[in-house]
Image (cartoon, rainbow, N blue to C red):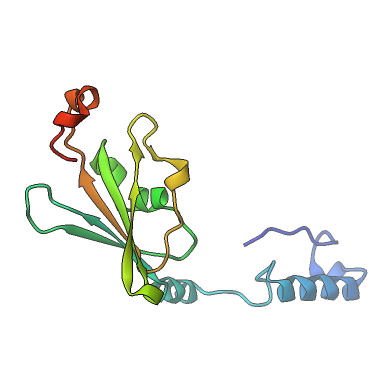
Length: 159
């Protein structure tokens, strides 16, 4: 909610130009810039969040057990990095392998986009920090690469 400066000071009973106040309040309520005339209750906000589209962050178990699934709500536009932070993946893993699975209904297939996690900056690469869409699944696995895997990539077992 925005804070606005009204063209008067003190109480409303001392307004010298009530027509100006009415115009300002009407313009703000029509433009959605102020909720003075149409207050939103906390239950309306909770209902909106409960009906928001969802995305999933799936934590794959490297040992073969059942995956853990975090379901997030898209109440605002977010990126893959923000989804990883909200799900707790950035706290859980220092180094991780991330893929974004996005359904393409027109072609009846799932698009799999690999995402690089930069361990030096603890952030997704900017060119791969895609917007999260409703129904997206972000697959997260622990990166078990050791220090020798960076020197000798052909010996790595995870690729």
